[in-house]
Image (cartoon, rainbow, N blue to C red):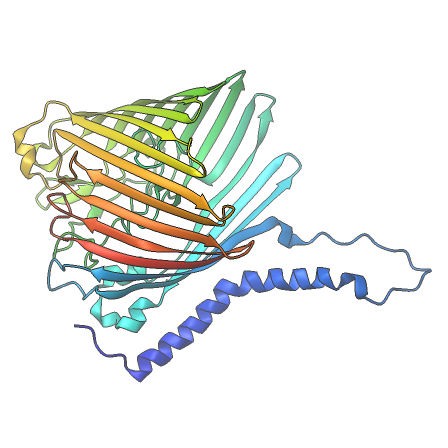
Length: 459
């Protein structure tokens, strides 16, 4: 049970709220001052007529953008998998978050950098001693360098992009088949879409152009993997921590590589992909003590999109080699994945999309039924999304349903969201998320329901 709020806890929480509020809102204050200076610039006392009039100095704030927001999440339903977990009913998130980005050019080269940070006050308000160290380290606070790169033209037909960046492969907004280069932040399952989950990596990317085609050559020099729910969190499916994780050394041999051939034509486009990367999910390795390691895999894939009137058709295919599972670790397994999707925009201010993906594990061994990675011979996922705009596009309603398994027998998610633009730079969104674990990997977690609300300012 949660402890009652003590005066000292409230005082500490209030103090930290004020500090974080100042950190988050500092960029907003700077913009407000700049706008105020511009507003009253015409009322300043003029200098002597004999003095020359100088051109106004360009403000550095024109290169800065980002957002500041506060997000609240309230858990309406939760079934705890063990005594080690806190009682997650009620307030589970009260996060202040800010992203500041700088984007400017030096001659023909673009310089871009972003930094993101957050602090979640829910843990102070609920009592920090109710949570595991792993939960506090992963969810309470964070500050990180996001994308930060230098981009420009080497020749008339070649571009260079070097630094921390995100490279998106494939066409689907719901599932990842060929999109394997950047890891995902999965700590809050289902709360946001894939486009907001990708984590940047240090890469060198060279693009070559010729007519309707371009070739991307990529080398990845940072080891970073999926961030998943940690021990003690309500989405963590066990009451014991995972074995220790061993990450590959930073050597030239351990660099990841990828290549893409893209063609863009009237009404359709086509891409081919190849990559040699480390798996974002660690494998269980049988040693004297079981550990977890990231194994290198090879992926060959392709993606296609075709527009016809109000219809958009997409397809992705990938073949992965070098998969390993604990119960048959010496065997190299291969998996083929196929995605088909359709999007309809013929209704007024409404878009409906449906994606289906199937994954097939070749030469399946029944021993894998008990492997902790939870592989299946055949795995299917379905996602349906409906988005509608109202009131001159100031109000957007969206519903998303995701099924793991044809009937959702291995888990299902429903998320309903309403977003309203209060004014040019201010917006508010809120909604309901329902999660059913059923017979999937998160079955020990049970069903969860969450209500969320976010107030956001973009600058």
